[in-house]
Image (spheres, rainbow, N blue to C red):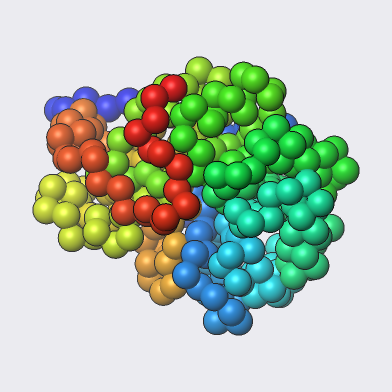
Length: 294
C-alpha cells in the first residue's frame, strides 16, 4: 500500500511522469488502471476505445454481454498499438457455462475481437445450476489451449472463491467485483491477498454517485482534483486492487488517468474509511448470496 502521513502535503506528479503500475498474477502482467466498456453497446464504442488507447490505456475490459466486442476489436486493430503491449479481458455470460458452450462463447468472442487469444477470460456471473468444477475445469482447458493467457471469475461470493481455489484448485488470475468507497470488500480482499490474487474493481465510481459525494469532493479540493478522481485514487492506494472505470468522454478518460498521480495521506484514508460501506448497487436477480459466510 502506498504510504502517507497526515501532516504531509499532498504529493502529485506531472502528467508526463505518470507511471502505469501493474500487477503480475499467474504469469500475466495487468495494468492497475484499465478501461471499462460496460453500457457502451454497438459500433459507438469504437471511437471511445480508440480515444482511450490514444491517451495511454492498455488494459481494455469487455464482455460478450456488453455487445461491443466487435467495436473493441476494431479499435484495437485501428490503434496500431503492439498486441503484446495490450491486456484484453472478455467474459462469458452465465447461460454459457457448460464446457462446450464455454468454448463456443470464447470462439465467438475471439472472432468479434479479431484476436487469436485474449489475455484474461472470465466467468461473468455464476449460474445457480452450473457444475462449478466442470465449468472451471473447462476454463482451465481454454487456457491450456492458448486461447487465453489467464482465467478469472467475476461476481463470485467468498464461499465460491474458496471452493474454486482450495477444492478445485483453479489458477485464478483475478476476481472482478463491485468495489467503490461505499462498499466494503474487506473479507474478500483479506482472502485474496493471502493467496496473491488481485481484485479488479468494477463500478469504481458507484455508477456515478462518487462524483457528487461531499467527503470525496472536499478531499478533491484539498488535492486539486475531483471527487471521482479521489474515489479511483483510493482504490489504487490499496494493495492488490485493479480499477476499470468507464468513461465515454475524452476529458473523463484523461481525468481517470490523472488519478494515478494522486497520493493519499492518512487523513484522506480515514475520511474515506468513515463513509458508509454497505451500499451495493449491482443486484441482478441471478446474483449469488452476498451475505453467505465463508
